[in-house]
Amino acid sequence: MTHFAQGGFRRRALLKAGGLGLAGIFAAPALAACGSSKGSTRLTDTKVDGDIGGTLNLLTWEGYADPSFVSEFESRTGVKVNASYVGSNDEMITKLRSAKGTYDLASPSCDSTGALIDAGLVRPIDQNRVPQLGNAFPKFRTAENVVIDGLTYGTPMMFGFIALLVNADVLKDPAPNWSLLWDEKYAKRSTVWNDISSIWNTSFHLGQENVFSLSEAELAAVKTELLAQRPLLKKYWSSAGELTELFTNREVDVASCWGGFHAAQLKARGLNVQEILPQEGFTGYWDTWMIPATSTNPATAMAWMDYVLEADVQKKIADVTGYGVTSQAAISNMSKEYVEGYRLEDPSFFDRASWWERVPNRQAYLDVLNEVQGA
Image 1 (cartoon, rainbow, N blue to C red):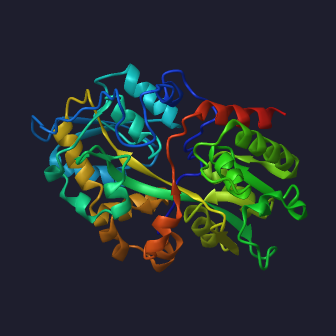
Image 2 (image 1 turned 60 degrees about the vertical axis):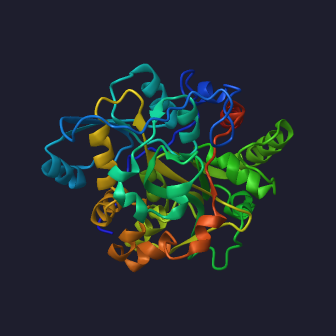
């Protein structure tokens, strides 16, 4: 890997829920945990009119429209690519609902795709126009949150997961448990991501079964545990670069991190760190390109979906963002360290991860985080 995401990257900052965003969509009783639900208004027509060309307007995360790979697509097709960036899935969905006809592609995370499909905000694709999809890891190609009744509504971009990261010079033989983030030996030497995933990690720590659909009582137990953790933390980190600097400056020894990403970045700086997949469980996510129902250029959108899954392009995207490739064809292009960091040759990894799902009582989760941080 040649370089990583800029230090200011802020992904999925989920401590706010816009009324038109995920919270509003998830509140609809017709939406089920995955797939299509009764009362769904999902679209089913895969027919595409028009040729590849014109302008392609992306609604996406920072790093997903970098000139290092966008320029080749523009050169091949004559298309002009424009990108608008968001900091959360809430913001993305709010824009899709309020600015219809503005965007040709969006890249929500996997916990948001089912709601977009059921709300009729995105359209299915013609797989014949995206042959590179056949090279994607099966998990991302066939997941129930993008494939419904034989129709495919999204194609993968990149993936990641949430892990533990420790200073291996201080923790010689760390336990593979989330409990490290509550260990008083590392008081004021630990940090966690300022994100809804902190609830999921805590839920694993408490031995709760389904971290994405906690009961009121289970959430109360999580809140109690997070309140106990709060005085032990150095701080909550928000951007990728912030956590990297905390370790680089020797301010922390234990953290929740973006798996694969932070360990590689810190090792490249000469730090002795160890990444741990907690035995209680861990979550993962992937970002999915989806075509808004009101896109005016779906043929070009599908050409982009196919392009970003090419092995060489996946490598370029990984170089810019530091995230995990979703095409198996790209593995041979990646360094040994990268392949090991993202467990690309470990089939069990994709089964062990709890991949992000929609949270039916999402606002309650966010309320807990806000209450803990405001205590």
